[in-house]
Amino acid sequence: MESIYTEIENHLRRGRHMVLARIIRQVGSAPRGTGTKCLILEDGTLKGTIGGGLLEYQVMEKAREVIGQGRSETLHFKLTGTELAQSEMLCGGLADVYLEPLSPDNPATCTLFGRLNTLLAEGRSGVLITQVADGHPQDAADGRLLVEDDGRRTGAIAGLSEDRLKRLLKKPSVALFKSADEGPAVFVEPVRPEDVLYLFGAGHVSTQVAPLAAMADFKVVVIDDRADFANRERFPSADEVIVAPFAEVFSHLAVNRSTYVVILTRGHTHDRDVLAQALEKPGAYIGMIGSRRKRDIIYRSLMDQGVSAEQLKAVHSPIGLDIGAETPEEIAISIVAELIAVRARLRGAAGGAR
Image 1 (cartoon, rainbow, N blue to C red):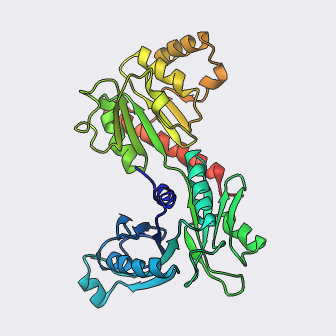
Image 2 (image 1 turned 120 degrees about the horizontal axis):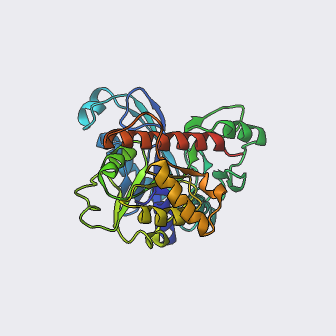
């Protein structure tokens, strides 16, 4: 599945104009929260959704004008009364949607979104700051700033002082910031890569792990060398199911600092093959199921092949939080709980971009 930022870069490379529509303010009950975004191409194609119904229809209609004029615009919605009755939505509230035209002819736009996708592909995070100003031209060299987790910057926003920028980055959250005394209104949104779970082994425990991990907002990829086990019927919640030999599959996988590897194969040999490959990659987490005796046998085998004891310390084995789990369902809960705990710790350690 492509992220909306990947979609943007791909369309810019193809020379296509588009509008990025974001909910920048939401009060009360609304179909989607602040930061939800969609893309409207010049042929009217919609990528993503900001809630459907009347709100989305009006955004799509206005996007045609924004593309034609090449200038940004904010739409204000009061999702109550007549507007709510005419829509398909069952909730009401207030929402502001910022329509930002993106032009493939603007080098600054192409450079920023290209850099943003490189950042995410590397498994790193950052903060995207967008100036919110009606009438901002699509060919302007400023109006967006990307600050990466190592401090690198791409783009610029006129009138945004260093002091204000430092405050915005201290504890970044998805929000609109307006202050008459501090320069332009800006929309701040942390950006981070998808947390991808590679689930090796398509046995019974994996059928329980996959839906739980998906509910916890992991992109789930199930891998097994048996088509009878690795299929959509058994894993309807998985984003992808791959049938391939365990010893060869890593060469086809994208592994970065937001990748989680869970090893639940049917035998010692497969576990060892997967673990040996995983230890060579820069993932966020490696966990392997099994008893301590099984773990020690595999570890000794890998150390005989040159793997260091220090490398093996990073492996979570036996896998999962110690909650006394016994059934496949309980084991799955312990595994996903550990994934969530590791993810929370990593995000907390990363903090905001500096």
